[in-house]
Length: 224
Image 1 (cartoon, rainbow, N blue to C red):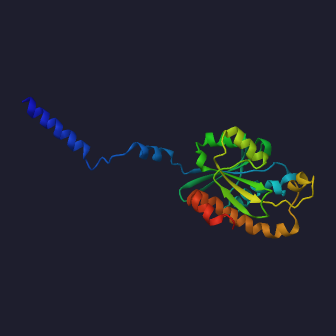
Image 2 (tube, rainbow, N blue to C red):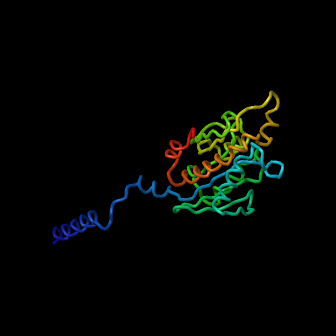
Image 3 (cartoon, helix red, strand yellow):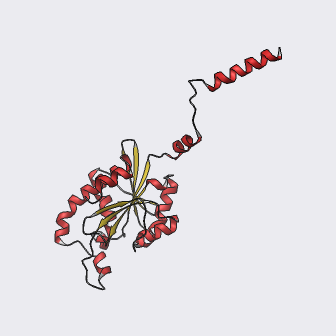
């Protein structure tokens, strides 16, 4: 009798383990599923105030403003910034313009990442770069702050530089000792003519990051 019971019990375990309705999920698969997110935080760096609207240092704000106008979105005043929400192909993009001034951008970034439960790999920061010629696009998965105070504060607050940044070249055509005036100055006439086409490409980059992924976006747009 005992032998018969053992046989039945053993057969039941085998059936449960091979049940085609219960596919096996390995631990690493569970981890991948858990980490997946369709929410993205797109941060444009800049300074608040009318005097900064058209300055080179505010290209992050300008790109998000262009994107919002193109997609008929409205920014709402929220804690630590202005926020617009955009849904596209099953993804949700939170467009954030921090109101903390450039040097304290990290506080707003951290707050909205935590509030919306956005993973670090879905953070995308747009900033100006003096080391690139005007309009040059450079998308990188990580890197130093490059002397940029906005990135410096984000790195400090998040305690990492392992997040994607989109650097928009503003060139370094300024005289010695005039860097601040140049960065906080308006675009010249030639740049103003070329800027709309650059803003269109920047808008496509934002969409691509959320839908095609970082690697494909870098391949498609870096140096374009």
